[in-house]
Image (cartoon, rainbow, N blue to C red; front, side, top):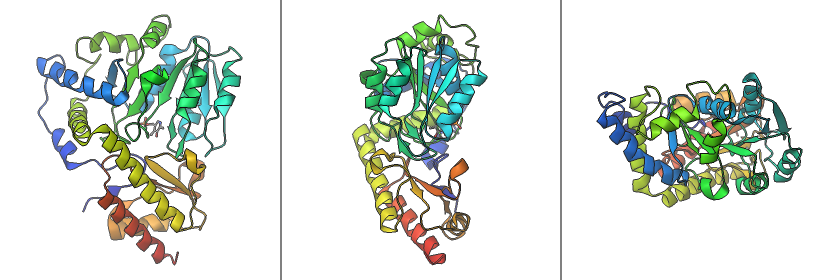
Length: 359
Ligand SMILES: *Cc1c(COP(=O)(O)O)cnc(C)c1O
């Protein structure tokens, strides 16, 4: 039996998606490729809730996270930081040579819109980065409130990472005025790693046209020029695009609302299990994200032993805490293709593995 991944990425990839990836290669400038690209585009726009183009990048999410900062920043970037991924984005912006400042919150806290307003009011910034769902802490920041603040500053372009929230709940890109909404393949979308997706506003492209040093691989103008032809700038990982095509068809067959409802239901089921076992979420409950739960290890479970038991007896694993939270928290994913049955199996396995430790 293959190992089922309840870690918050990569998550288990379905048989149907794996099979789609075995389709034969084609030229990336061929009619077949353009048909593939153009079939996916409206489905992607519907999922991103946008009329803007959705570009596909053969890279992990970090590629386009770095690219967004390089393309858009002239004056300075404000990085909202409340966990491992958002903290690193500040470091990445600095490594790109951009003036970057940190807006720090404790790990497990959500980003506070009032603090964002105060920082942007200094006038030092023309880009804001935000991680909607901080995967390292299972924290969902109040996106609508933060975007309402950002819209008070028309010169500030917004880049929102939705790697672990995309398609688990609705994100109204255009209605909220998000300039770049990006995600990766191996978490909420349950595809293999290596693909990043980003919906990019016209004003983001206009800004990019005035910025030096965009490079080539993540140049938004290159993406757009090729997008108009139904293509990507360079040869993409076509197998991953076959996987995405299959996934988008499945998402549309399920229905977006049904998909959001399924994620909420499964997320609540895992939460209820954790609360019944005496665990609490790391973030305040109202800021708990919906594609995973990050619990405090309040009962001092030996998480390495827990995972060893889960693996040996049940062929599955969860996550024992990210970075400085290792051992102190554990994270359980309900992203991707999980079902009531697969989550019930997981919870029964967790019960068994806890009992094995007398917990
Ligand atoms: C996993 C993750 C990333 C980085 O993804 P890569 O695919 O490793 O580049 C970025 N942001 C968030 C919120 C993530 O969970």
